[in-house]
Image (cartoon, rainbow over all chains, first blue to last red; front, side, top):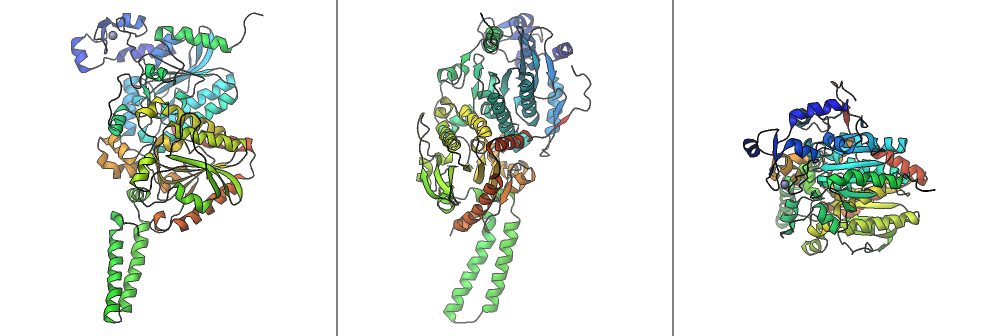
Length: 285
Length: 325
Ligand SMILES: [Zn+2]
């Protein structure tokens, strides 16, 4: 049951840094990385992990996202048992996967399933940047492709919450090919009339930006999320020019016409269910 | 004569020795034919030995050779009536990608390729073959045009990657690449790619979602450059040689992984030793691929293409999995 994951997850309450650990009692209090204000973890959770004083959106784990988004008890997970292999015999890769499974309680960097948002059924994929920085390997690509195919069978929309450092280096070209695979399945879904929504969360970069994250019928993002293709440091080294402070933030992308809307987390559920309602038809007769 | 690469030094040295011996024979009018023949046999052996035992890193060096033929070098040998078409109709024209219409064995075709410079000046103009969003969008415009008129698309992949720059990000580099993958997956005409040099990351893939991927044997195609991989994985870009091996980026490696469809052999020592001869081999492989795709109608092509990409990836099932929801 989904409930078990939440119980398990509590053991791994994240504290931003060693330094913060010393200053703030672990688990009970949380210090905002942006404004440095300290909040009760309980209150923070009630506030959907948004800092009350500055509006900073804490990164969510995949199951936290599921919990705040879906109607209670409606979420049903797909393909939880899928795990990565080591196709290139990359030294140390399997150990790193093990470590991240231990750390996160997840089998991979994306959780997929279906559930209800204010009564509207949808398929969802939620990435979790704690697992291998949310990088896309074969399993991430496959779980996303399968969830889109299931949405097609069930005649449901797909919402993907992206959070990714890009490609899974240790899977080499197989990682790059997941971009082609997910995009190809989305094309089929789109031709079939399927509704696809992306919500880009912090951070969404590299190969995920250059594939499904950018292909929504609606591309949304959370405030302050870092979104881009190339990394800031690589760009700075290449062009030797100072980049604006808001470079590659959700707000920057909105300004440059790359997003439909930046949606604060506490309005997300309402906005998404409104979009879903517009796409289910009905209305006055 | 193209300048030699490090691993080719013994060959260069032996060639020089043969030249010296020849001029010595002429000068002194002494017959050393036996000795000359011995050296020439040795040269042949050495060339075969060297070029059949190339490491991935040797191949990367050949792929990056300044004299390696580019898209525009191959086009006149492979096609007739090529007319270059410019611009994405949205922002501008990106010289890092060239494209246009032509004939292949007499049949109409759309040709698109990444284009690096052949000298420093041209490299500056073409941004080292690293495209901006308008480059990928030009490519997409030409592909949709090909679809409208029912002619196949042939693409040439040769890029160090999509350009990492401020303007590129502002104009949606990620979206431009993503859109190409999405649209190429459903394009209702036969599509063939040839990796002719370097193929790095999404910038390469943006021209590479096709029915058949052919690859020159001394090209590389990877999720990231060997230097980038080394920097990310081991915090040392100097370990690029190791990354070239570990990441499995060369033609032979990728054929084994079933990522590419055909490996195109190169002339001895690499395509730059004889571009015209190389073009002939590419032509044979392209024509074979073209004829392989000929029998399929548009719907079959799209279905087969989707199936091909759908299968890519390797994964397993957790053995200790007990708590499925
Ligand atoms: Zn704050």
